[in-house]
Length: 179
Image (tube, rainbow, N blue to C red):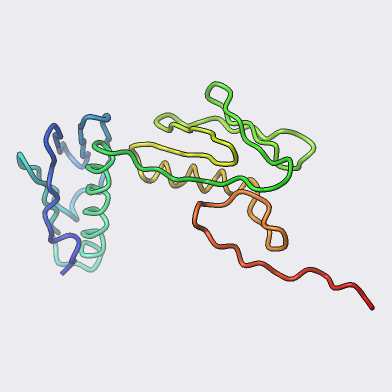
């Protein structure tokens, strides 16, 4: 039994759910999210105030998807009611980020500026040395934040680069001068 999948997912006020064929659509105050799920393995049903997920078969594959699908639907319900957010810190002398229209422009110590266009559904605010990434889709917010971090990962000697807020970088000792 899946501990996550067996629990019903409550729908807050002003939130609607619809299932058509293997496509689940959740509408809420902050927008609409749609996701296609594999048919035949897991049954997703919507009532007025809750969503239930149950396996159709007793196969190992259906049981594996049960909790996963329940988590996806729970994240969709949360996303249309309150946005997900990730905070990134840009550290290093001369390292900075600025927002120009729908493009992020980074100065990361390369010979050229690095430009990244924002995907649809993502909002970014740039503060001094920090980026705040917000959006309704948890998967999109997380993958975009990971992409930004991969542009210049934090290095272990001085800690320069882009890191998540709260991420701990293990520091290494530098070269010692010969005496």
